Image (cartoon, rainbow, N blue to C red; front, top):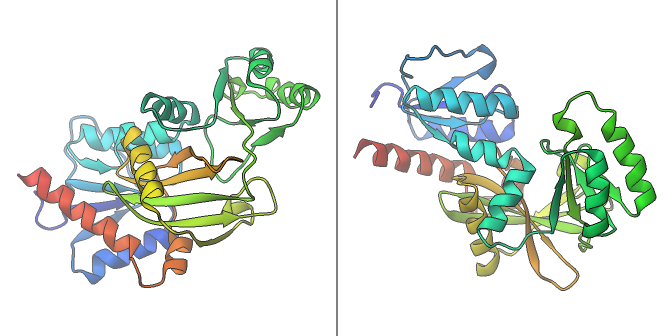
Length: 288
């Protein structure tokens, strides 16, 4: 164990959430180093000087490769490379949720736009098409009928990236103008918020408004099980309610932003401090 700086926080952008984590580490007198991933490189065979690394890199490719390299260098990374890769790919997330027996919208994958159109005949309309990777509701389209699907998939077919032409589809869930975000740290659900919007995409980045949601035992259990399904130690689990009131798992976010939730929580729970607690527990378990 490196006694000088046992912890490192990897982040190219220090957003409000990262500031809270770094401030919590400093306030508690815990030696750490902030590493800007844009300046970091690794040579195979080298050992990393910081045993525990909190991976807060916002870019998926950099986050995944950084976690791989850091683990190869002997560091314990939170979240792990496997968890980051699973959470960063919607299809792999859905597959893990289904494998774990968790309720989630019916999902299909088309390896070409033409195959996706055929898949939609079985999935039914309305439906939703999403990029395999991406956040904040970008490039997500509603498909109310076949004519719309043909138009959208025609654009997908023209995309230059072969991966972008692989089509991820989900059934449309008539949710009540909101979804639920639950923060999970170290196998415990800390808090939940409703995200309300007039737009069908209830992303805060698209103008949705957050407000506290009662964290019932059922919501907490479902969120923890979803995080465990993708092996995420720190996660934002997105849940949606269907017309019958059943709660479904939509996706799991590995680099969850929590500043808005923290503002709504006030002093009830410090998410940043709970993350620091988890890092300390990881450090203790790695030393045993």
